Image 1 (spheres, rainbow, N blue to C red):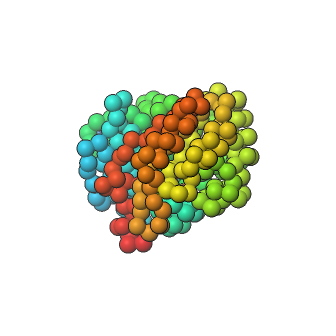
Image 2 (cartoon, protein in one colour):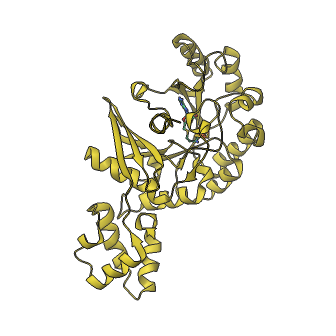
Image 3 (spheres, helix red, strand yellow):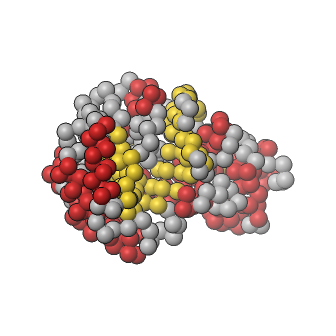
Length: 340
Ligand code: SAH
Ligand code: SF4
């Protein structure tokens, strides 16, 4: 049976119309689910018993189970068990401007990036939109405050689960539901060009982040197999097009890996690549994982890399260090739990 958390508001309207009911029932159901946060249809007290029975025939209010929370000052890490026994993670971060959640979009990932724990473990399956929505509901239930920002940067490649990603955005953006503004949502991709093209037409102004991690094909091919399918020049060309069409800024994520992509030459090459684009570069200190053998760049190498970009007047930040103590890099908690 379908989880009701998979349904968009428009789909619920259609459902109620199909059983001969008024469409405001969809508003009531959304309010029960996302404002009052009930866990069963029986709690929807302003909806008639026979309609509740109809709902029960069609849908379940299924729940992912919270398995474990690791808590730190600015960050909590959540491990969930799905109804089929698979595990995923979400990370909550507290900022001056609010609280953001980093959610997973798949169990594992097929992109196989060599530095990434989720890539090492391959994709088991896509998450449904409902399972993405529930990560927000469960974490809010734990912290008892509203989440203001959502990033889709946990386990998985969201553009390899594109339809569910779009559905997820539509559900959490809906005003009478969780109501997270599309400008407060960011999706991160390893650079699947045809999906970036489709994303251009998506009617929600979601921010786009690109996992670049290298300034040329030689290094990127070694880190990210996807680059052999969609090489850097094509990716940049498509992103310039994206910026022109949407008038939105793109974020480049760049993990600094010791001795691999952190030289002065790499910094300059990176600047040449993105110069003139409406973008900013987010330098990420690598979170070392036991299994993969990559090392984080030294502190002064990171500063030097940053200075070179800054001097070229390109927007750049070094990502604040979140949760290195608590396995907060993508996929680390899951692989520990499953002993993978
Ligand atoms: N698949 C998407 C989104 C999930 S990965 C993508 O690749 O963009 C989210 C980000 O975490 C990516 O930029 C990824 O490169 C980065 N990442 C993966 N493993 C990491 C690690 N051990 N330390 C720091 N960042 C990591
Ligand atoms: Fe997948 Fe992103 Fe990890 Fe690459 S970095 S393996 S695309 S989750």
